[in-house]
Length: 303
Image 1: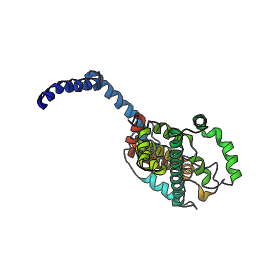
Image 2 (image 1 turned 120 degrees about the vertical axis):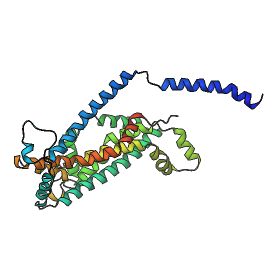
Image 3 (image 1 turned 90 degrees about the horizontal axis):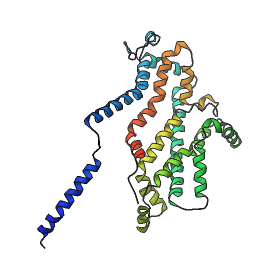
Image 4 (image 1 turned 45 degrees about the vertical axis):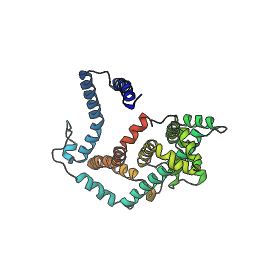
């Protein structure tokens, strides 16, 4: 049989399969259903964006507009006086603004990096290796997620005090390393990574570190990007007032909230404080939004 005849016999079957595949992927919705769905999504987006828009607009309002009733969403005479007053007030403190900023950045960066490294390595072992007590340990991690920080504050304080870490950066950084949520997230995501991919790398001569750094971590990038976002949000907004007492080690959020609680005279500065506190987590989320969505969907890798 010639090649042309074989080609003519296979083409109809391929076309039929392609049409069936397209029909399965096409959603079974009418045009009205699509319009209703988009309208619903737009309403949800407006509800979610409104608090951010209102916070930013409040920070740009002069004092007379902040006290106006009923309040207006957008300022009529936008101004940056609230931000300038905030920096003037911070400048009068005997601890400089840059010192508060350094404390927060140092705690956030070191805590996030340590959390990522420890959670990733532990998750790789739990997901791809069998060892005695592994399942029990992961059950303990799952149970630990149920306990909030308020429940563990007293035992954490007693332990950190025994170690001599009270009133140091490590009182915030070290507990961040052991956050169970990061380990749970990374382990669940690594389980979807094909074991055959790891075995193929070992056959090619890769050792455990090469497999972890060059094979596993690049393929679970959405997971550890999500972990970074959650960790940064938690550490950036940590007041650390329970464990840190020295003013020169206080975080930026603590100093800003002290200004915010200064009464009616600092209402405008309080609105500016809210924007300064939330700007970093929002920017990180915006830049890594696609990675979070990919984590929620799945990696798409199967054995």
